Image 1 (cartoon, rainbow, N blue to C red):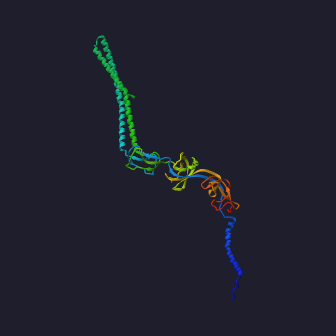
Image 2 (image 1 turned 135 degrees about the horizontal axis):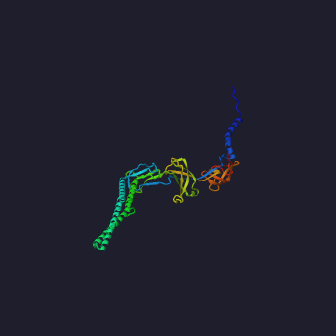
Image 3 (image 1 turned 90 degrees about the horizontal axis):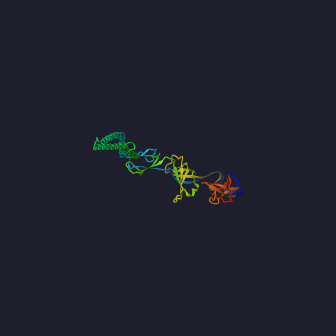
Length: 406
């Protein structure tokens, strides 16, 4: 059988050239547009929206004040019916001291009051009536003695009585008058406002004051919560001897917590009372909650070059705890309906800001004037319009280069 005729040499040569040109054509198809039209780049559209400027700070959770629980007397701890970290109500017992001696002192003070009351009662119900009757008797005796003296004087004048009888009648009259004066003083002393009555009232008043003091000392043996809150610290145990005015516990009142943060003094001019903020505890960074600036310390801490700022939290999350570390974003400025451009598209933002705008297939340098600056974007006051396409600052493109932008 005859073999097929061989292919012409020219066709074989052309076939080999075609195979060699395929990679060249592929490379041209791949790099040709980039060389002719420029690289393909992403762009950011200038848009209108709302821009916030905030100051970021860290701090801790605290309450507006804390209450130091202390004893007003010296004593031995008999009972502590609460635990550290426990929530307590107003008037709930926190500590009980041993009160045996105080109970005895109270009983003694009550006895002294009863004795003083009895003495005053005896004065008004017994001594005074007796004094009144004694005075009446003395007045009658004086009247009789005066009559006797008058008769003796008349008889002595007429010669029917001796001088001795007259002197005796005079002495009897003088004695009766002195007795009457003494009885009157005794009555006046026992009546209301008199010396004995005033003294008895003073004794009763002093006894009652001693009773109140004894009752107060006994009451001080039981230490109760002055406000509702949470016990956040305790430094005593049963059997300890406590001294007066020595703190035993620390109570955090049940009130809306505050956030205390330190603001860099360079941002002091941006902070104002009433500014809103968003905060989160470092333990729960996703659980953000609202706060508001309530206090700005008028002085600057020279050691830290910072200013203390307090923020109120009206609706704290349940997980918020005393002394937690928090992060706070205080909104110091807000503008709506303005032209916004991400900071990643702005070049030399700290100086004479400019951008590269995609225009007619080229990157054109355009100077811009910035307004409010936020954490990720800035306000464009001049140089751009809404919808302009801006190249990112990271793009490896120079002004005047060809670019392909979507």
